[in-house]
Length: 269
Length: 224
Image (cartoon, rainbow over all chains, first blue to last red; front, side, top):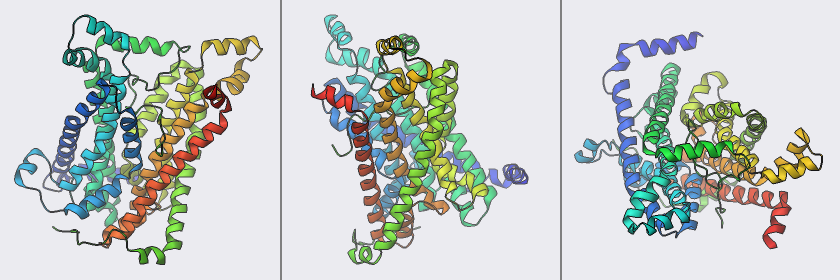
């Protein structure tokens, strides 16, 4: 109890709310690098997933990409990247857009891409061919088909991929402190080094809350992005337990984003 | 601030590997132990939870949201949050790792049970299977592929997460990663990374094999 009390006192201390080691600054660093990494990953991953999904090719590649991404330890990637690129300050223009550490940024982007590609591919390639035929029958071109049929229908899975990635990115950005950069990981890492457990605990709490906040706000975004008709369909399907489960289930409302349930192929295959 | 500029260290210094085979093997075992215990506890907790959520539909939402929130908590934060309570024991690593498996396992058990077709259930009823007997001798066996798919995802995820626990004195092969990094020595970092990925691939393949052996009817169907 007294420990919780002293952690609360830590939050109450005005010194922890200002300056380069203050909560606002570190939180902002953390949010900035996470945001820009997810953004860049979306720009790279979505076109790849859409392309392969639209042409229904490269499924093997798309599915294995996520498996490999899961197996690679983020910590090792980060340590490798730092040894490769050093920890010097990035050029000014990068810092302006929120990239405070090049190795951290690169690892976050690399980490965020696989779930997005896999989910986008699964979403687009899993669309009922009859819906596509109907759209073509209405005279839609390939581009129209992609924008007006495939993307909306795949949106639950695309969003699920973005949520999975975003939460992983926020979590992994914490590791940046180990390689001497900022973000909320500073509290955890420094706290554990000098045995300041209040600071460590406070940092862990802040990161956990940030991750949950990101997850919930993306769930809200998903609510607006996913077409209404799909939400209804999903719910009624949920009740009908006699139907076989879809290979890559859409994300039930209120549930954290997850990659498709079945790794259809092995890592080794 | 230049902590560890790339100094041209070779990727692998084989003499280090030769001198440290015992320690490497020990860390591999530690790694597998952490993953194994966490998976075991994960199954022990997730299976009843999923069965309850399957039986009582209104528990489904809460079960998935609670495990979903647990899954969201960053590993480094979870390990650190436990540190004041569990100290430097293995539990500091095992408790959060177990928590991470829950969402994956509960979801997949539920998906597997949902996937059993109504016709099969009716046939089972007709043959006099009902209630828990139907659940354990018909529904669960048919859900095995989905359950093992969940185990595979959970196992591979955990194998990649364990290294982070090196920060709280656990971490198996992660210990080598941090050590190599801190001493500006590439070899332990490379060796540990390669081993982690290799373990993930091997465990994944083994679980797939278990699935094949546990569901002989699928093989027969595939051949037919």
